[in-house]
Length: 200
Ligand code: ADP
Ligand code: MG
Image 1 (cartoon, rainbow, N blue to C red):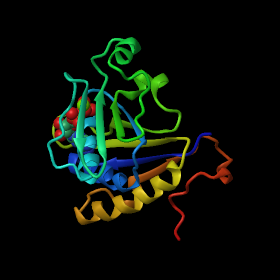
Image 2 (cartoon, helix red, strand yellow):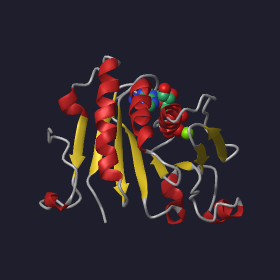
Image 3 (spheres, protein in one colour):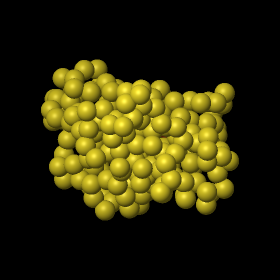
Image 4 (cartoon, rainbow, N blue to C red):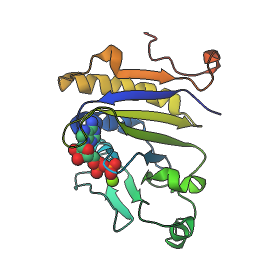
């Protein structure tokens, strides 16, 4: 089952961290988040915000050389970066024959490279450069693609929490243009997708 994806524009690393931190309260052990996007897109920045939202106090760095970092927050957080791995077999050899852990929150950078090993129910987050600036502050598009499970409702909670956080940071992107929904079933929005324009 597919759902609408939700896209948000962030104008700085701090904003990306705020959106990720707003997702954190929705997460429970057993959840998997797959991050995709080019080198330097902001995947690790996203994990930093997510980890801090999960109560992790130690520094979060890219586990490019060690493949996996484990942090202790409200729950264990496993942070993988499979960029340097050449094949599924290497991931399997490392003991990740299945990228899920019911006791931890699992976040995988370059998750699309090991898609067949991911649990069918997961959240896919894609980060793309949105502005001309690649170095330093710049705009990013973060697209949240629910893959099964209860993600649409959780993303709606994330959006509301993120709006408050971004407003308190004095966000430079107007609220109306910051968020967008893309339906994967145009014309069939009545099938349970989220509508971010709907006020309650
Ligand atoms: P990745 O893990 O995807 O390779 P990193 O998170 O390590 O990328 O690096 C992202 C880089 O982009 C950092 O230097 C960060 O400061 C910069 N950056 C600029 N704008 C943003 C933004 N809106 N969100 C996230 N990172 C940003
Ligand atoms: Mg990284």
